[in-house]
Image (tube, rainbow, N blue to C red; front, top):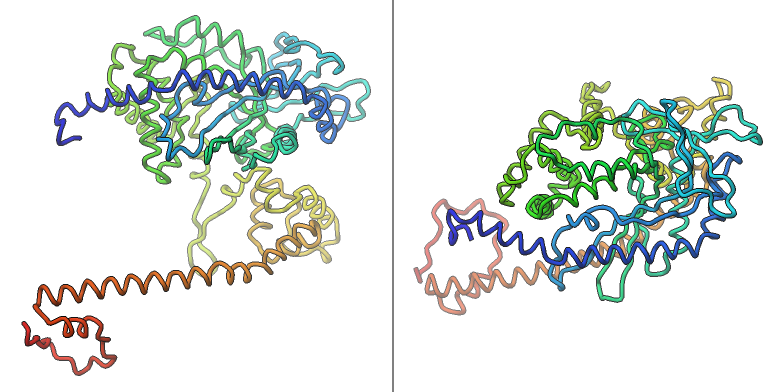
Length: 538
């Protein structure tokens, strides 16, 4: 295409991109609306099930569990924003993504700065009693908060209990396990999202869902920076700012990586604000972000570290700082976006568009800065793995240990034993990254701890170890036979090609060429002279 178009290549790519990216956007938007309504009806009909599942997480009467309902289901992410990649040809279209915010409530709020408490979002639902009140407490990481349950007269504890984010994620996971049906395959807990896949009636078409439980806060309490920022070119317009302020924002159940209270923290989510801002982008501005995603997908695994969310954030900053009439080309816009991202990575700073105190590159750069090299006792170099193990989520710990709470309880009992009876090198808890290193990287000790504290997990590891040789025999041996067969076929092809070359290039007779091509080399080559023999045919 470059050879054919020459200096006009940018114009051709722009026109192709505009036509491809604009296709099917309206259909996708209408499909999202339909799915939202269908899902909301299903949650409404299954309220008794959700109510029963909450009982296992209720610690006290002050807990919101037991009174939470699904107040709305809203599609978010690239599908709702019309920033998704263009569909592949039908023969290669195997999956599609759907991100949904599952809003729980009703909840009343109290804020750190002693501002006026907001009313319960949605009011009190029949049969649930008064809406619970949660007190928002700031953490050392901007964008992450703790939620403390307001004590009731019947509470026996002296301090406010934390409304644990990990329990909310697990609640939605339990619900999906029971309601998803046979067509659903649960993949994992990815941050705050519960991810699973469904197979539709269309052959080989899989839809991958990321359902995110959330709480809505109808008050923008932490900073007015987004609303008072100087905007030279009036983007986004004032009507958008008013809409965002009136709606508020969401909290999603995920903590800051490496934080001491990671399992109970909540993160500010601006997904709804992003949806409104993206809606006022021009077509070319949207196509620039989509083009970035297409290029990222073309790079495959090499581009996994580059999150599409970074590109969307960078685009919003660029569109705010430049006039709309300058965005006339997808290719030139993409170059400008890449330059902006390159500078952000160089400076290790990409502020959140809605609150600049949040640095989206903070967790990446902090982990890289914390990892240190040191000399091992034998004189070699050794990495400190503690900052990396701090990134393990609650789901990761459950996958490794089966029941982390049982392991913690067993470790605490061991720490209370006399020092002479206490096993050496055993951590007292798993709350710090250093404790995780001492247990998870010491395999003999880890095996012993699991055999004592989580016997069923240890037995599962044992069964896996016993079945591994059988699996190797079952799968590796046939694979080796197949490999040998393929090699023999390739050898025959190569020998046939050699024989043909000997006949055509060196003019050998058929029988001479066949015997020469299939002749095995002698093992003893000590008598070989430097000058090879020349065939009489030559």
